[in-house]
Image (cartoon, rainbow, N blue to C red; front, side):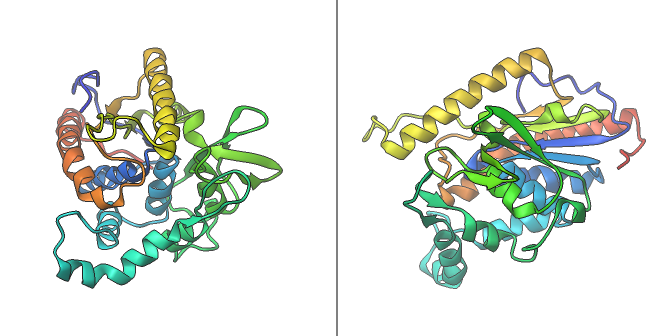
Length: 295
């Protein structure tokens, strides 16, 4: 866990709020955190998510356990070390996942997320925020007004699509008369919207960028995404100076890009130590005050 996290003397009681940050494939690490909370019997009273944090958060808020989310992710991805048998066994699902992010040469972006979201939320095509078992906040940015937008009612998929509309990569989303972009522009880890909670857990999956020895100069997409991440990191640093969540989890994920779907196992492996550290802090805090968190 991040070295600046509060000491484990924090006492667990009252309402638990969980904030899940954006980060593309790195956001799949959220499944490990949610699985751990399930194992400890800690049920969030509310979830706030940005970009991939909104995707994973929506699945969890709809009733899918953390373990099931992790299993679904692994079932539809292939590691670089996979043998041919594994590739052939997963080929159909893999093609569905990769084909789901399609080329879109129109205004606003290079890629479309329509099929991706329909695939991930295949059981929830007509889901609304009001259907969620756990209240959910999805963060987006209003392009013309230059302000944060908190989506909490109405159709779920358009809101999640807006929250992950990375500038220059995914096309902006028109919703309720506004043009919306990725929530990471304004609030990468939205724990500040959990102020009515007694205990807050914020999960930041921004990555450490390592130079490529063969190609030290980033290409177009790498430049866009890398610059976007630098901006997000600086915003988070300033935000943490002003206020901190009860528990701040920042796994040290290195050399994993936003679209590195073949590195999901690496995301899980690199994130596990931080998740284990958080488990220890929460377990200790629960012993100090055995009262369970209430939804």
